Image (cartoon, rainbow, N blue to C red; front, side):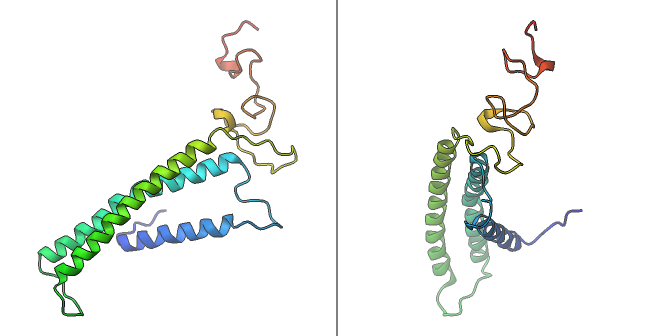
Length: 170
């Protein structure tokens, strides 16, 4: 059962909390197995952060739009007795910079995502047991070693396809 959140500010707080939990889970501890034990783990984590960064400019812009609407409708005051529209203009300036920085963050994470993509796990065979298949762009859902993709699913030795997809004469 999912709960629908209708308060966008709560969603922003939830996103911040999710990043905080990610930071706690991935904090390097010498006495524990790394939370990101494989290059594919880093690849997926960077992908998630990149998606988050891609969505930030729109979220930031919509905050500015909300303030503009409040200002235009005359529903803003100011505790310092300054004109509220002056404060909104300052906020907008900072939000524009934040949107630009979020776009730059997205671009940088895209470069990081691409840079990590050729990496594969080459550690000891007795590494963590839950190594996901997917290394080397394999599309199966097996676990283990023995094929170029890193999995041990039954494949044709010639075309490397699953036997049900193989057209070889063997």
